[in-house]
Image (cartoon, rainbow, N blue to C red; front, side, top):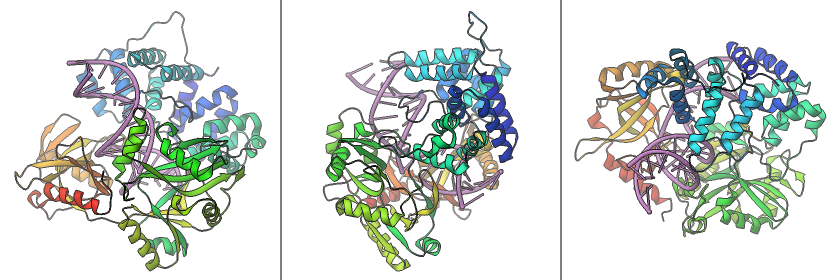
Length: 559
DNA sequence: ATTGCCTGCCC
DNA sequence: ATTCTGC
DNA sequence: GCAGAATGGGCAGGCAAT
């Protein structure tokens, strides 16, 4: 049984060095010595996770729950804790500082106990298993008792772990190398195994138990999802063609990425983060069954909502279908989804991810009726591809994905084989009316800005979104100073300012907002420039935003 | 029974 | 999701 | 060039408070 303290100490050492090799060495020598049944937890914890992927439960513990435990331990009131936390760099730092400042109350135990790795895991398990009335309270009771067993450093680690914010500069890539080193396995073999399984903690155990041999025998298993392959952003078709010369361009649909698995008549649907959403999507299951019957297959695609004319509905609608547990049938009728496939990873036991894209696509076209496929076209001229992009946009889709014809399917990798191309939309000049203090590396700045549009009738400003994106560190520094001068309210976290600074904001879509008084919200807002030349009176009006919102339905469906 | 808050997870 | 930054 | 950090809107579910 390894003390939890040792893992905490390891994390401290990892965070102290910026050398990747040193980090790898530290982790590798640690997990090499660890008993087999502790390896999995150690790997998960170091990566900021609690339960292994595939465990459909979750802790339901985050900031708020931690705060209430901290309150219980310190006896401090909200104001005192707020003061400490608002000045802290992050939650781990805040926890540590609060525990240093107030002598913490602890649950007393019959016997002197030391926290072990397994024990922490068992606490997480218990917390994840609690459901029903008063479960929140019981979860907090368990957290209280867990934190009672922890010293300040362990508490800091736990707080970071529970919020998934380890900040020790150890990512999965380094962990793979550490596993490789610890058990003397080629790193590419470890990487490959992680790709096929989508769970590094399981690979660590297999590596320890069976070495290279165990990893070599790993295959795609139906009903165990792989991480989906991802696309890199591209600015233009030209940029993509310069890189690839010739590529397959596919419509980029604005829906939900689904990895479909089927075998023996059973069908499952997994999301991008590998959660099983089959229950809420009976129509998608029916479609997949229609497409493949009872064949064994793993395929990749996107589900979107469509109106009776076949036009795509805004993402907001699709989103209503996901994870729904009540009224599934009614909801499926109101917002019918449709599956569009674009890749096939396995069929009848034959793994296809190492086949080049064009072969996988060809196979898919041979197997599946065109109506189920994402439209695709191979282009080598900019004109050709631009026309295809225009067609995608005219039909209400988001843009294109360009794919290298001879590329293999690399699960979980965002590489230079797939590119996403989204058109640049007109920007809006909006006014900053408030800001929030940042967190972590931005904790000294005001880094999250409330963006408002003017009502041309009343002259009032209405918030239509927030953003923290687009400024450089240097600009944050300057903006923070300017905003502080304009402040008329400051509680240490939220700062309200006189409307004065105008920023040019890019966005992808205007959505209906249940949250903002304006009734509208920007999707993916980011600042592209600071409009020193504009006054708030010259900023965008809420009336115009409404017009833009309506215009979106020229191409998109409505229900 | 309704509303509000938190969490996790889609994008 | 998007952006900037550090390695 | 890649991964991580910081954080957006909005959805459903599930519990707590009213």
